[in-house]
Amino acid sequence: MTKLFFIVLVLFARLGFAQGQVEAVMAGKAAAGRFSGTGLVAQNGQVLASIHKGYANRQFAVPMTDTTRLPIASVTKLFTAILVLQLCEKAQLNLSDTVGRHLSDLPAACRAITILQLLTHCSGLKNEPMQAYSSPYSPAEFVQKFVVRKEGLPVPVFNYNNVDYILLTRVLEVVSKKSYPELVRENILEPLGMRNSGMISEEQIISGLAYGYHNYSFGSGTPNLPLKNDPPVYLSNYAGAGAIYSTASDLLKLVQALKANKLLARKTTALLTTPQQKGFVEYARGYPAIGFYCNDKTFPRPVLERRGSINGFNAVLLTDKSFSKVVILLANTDAADLEVVGDQLYANLN
Image 1 (cartoon, rainbow, N blue to C red):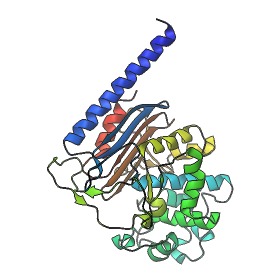
Image 2 (cartoon, rainbow, N blue to C red; image 1 turned 90 degrees about the vertical axis):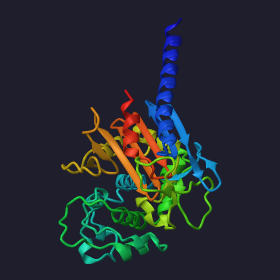
Image 3 (cartoon, rainbow, N blue to C red; image 1 turned 45 degrees about the horizontal axis):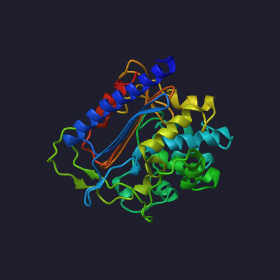
Image 4 (cartoon, rainbow, N blue to C red; image 1 turned 60 degrees about the horizontal axis):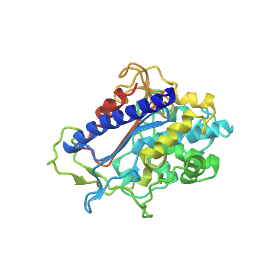
């Protein structure tokens, strides 16, 4: 047996073992009624496991596949952060810029907020009401209607919200003179060949797009616990805060591009992995960086986390600071506790 043949044999054995481990975990969750979606585990550029469970559409029993497109909710914010940093590299934006420098029609109390404060949720802006998604709003209309300072909240204090990133969406559009969907497509999706990713639009029929369902069980339910259809909301209103759909394999392309510095220069990519605040935010499970949260408490080595949740659509992206270990989970129900599932899968990586 040659050395090369032995190495190949070991790699295949490892791949089979990992696939078996992941399949066992996810099959158990699915059988317990606690997962419907798709997932991927990769290390050092090698996909160790790819799984698909449940239904993309329960009314017509359409099975989940590797090309099922799922809304990724707040994982969208990572795309927005990358676009902001790309404009910074072109000297069209600066992280220290005030928003008022680019948007003159903001309320006076909001004009001094910086781009960095928006990226790290330290803007002091008020969270949007649910009515923000009951009617269609463009990013410009959303900003005019829902960008308001939160009374009594000093800056900078961390306050997670979608308004920060929808305001960033509008800044990107004004500075670049292009729509957010154009920016995402031209600067991320097309260069990386992410053909199953795009922007949600209620005016378009998007082939392969999963339906969403919920029962608020988050890992505590049973197979017999009924699921309800997600309420009719305008997901497109989330814009750069949560309106992208994708697949696990497409999101892996994004992580690999970050590792190879294809989207950003090496020095700029480092900003995605560098905490911008000292305080560990327990409910976000990390120190806020730009686009990610840096978690040094759950695993022996720091992990970058990006999570998302809108109704039944839930998403998790876990990776290390070198973008070598990757766990991606996308679900179209909230029956799973993706934090727990993601941790189980990530813990099996060397």
